[in-house]
Length: 140
Image (cartoon, rainbow, N blue to C red; front, side, top):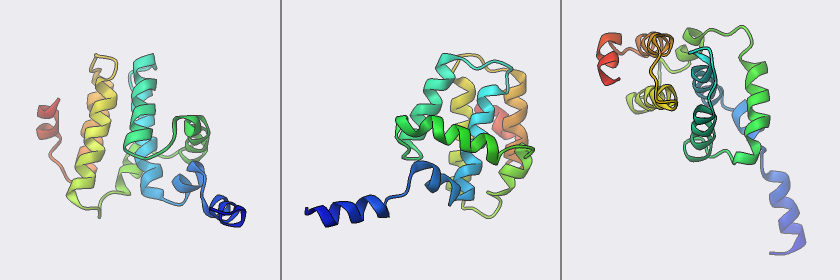
């Protein structure tokens, strides 16, 4: 590849923050997952590792970009409720909704303790997504 093509590729490539900013559903899902890290009142090393893993495997965000994405999400999510974020998914297909719940459950389980605040958050999001909260509690 020549220099001109390399420069063209670099200029056409969006940063991870730009990709998240350009996709409100992705931003909402990431913010919900990030909020799950704090739902029990403490953030553990296991939860941080799970967030990084979800960023890299599910959202295709390189680990080196995660701190910048977190900074963006803090600004994006200021004064936004979990229910408002989950509402971004009301019209999405069932698979994506289920993936969101699975990601939230994975984050809640990351520290090997399922706290009542985490269960409540998952149930509230499940309800907004059209799932029966009691059924989803059964998944836990």
